[in-house]
Image 1 (tube, one colour):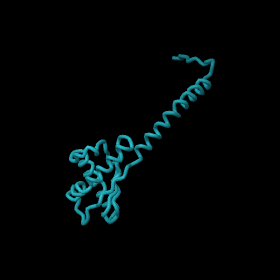
Image 2: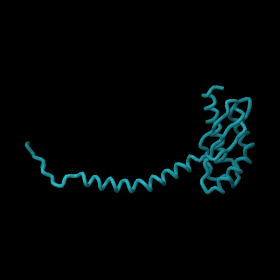
Image 3: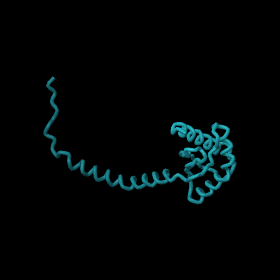
Image 4: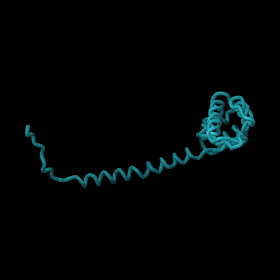
Length: 139
């Protein structure tokens, strides 16, 4: 299967799973879940669905279990959307990218205020004390 076709299938799976989570799933464990991206195996038999879950580690694990229990339902929704010989078997994986970006942002906010204070002090030191040049109007 061509990589372009795999990308289209992955995008279709992402859309179907996202919409089903938002509108169809009634499982209280599956809340505040975002599908970040999907990886599809070249033979279309497996798809790895990366999800981001807002909340602590316990809530994240509960949400993953809820998604795993709804995998059959989600696969049936996918089968209606994409026309392939096999409907991919879904595997849900917690996407750590969002968590890592929040951590990096927190670290930057700790470091940058100190840098901006240092830069402001350095800029003040670079300014001349006496301004001998005055603008003249020769008009």
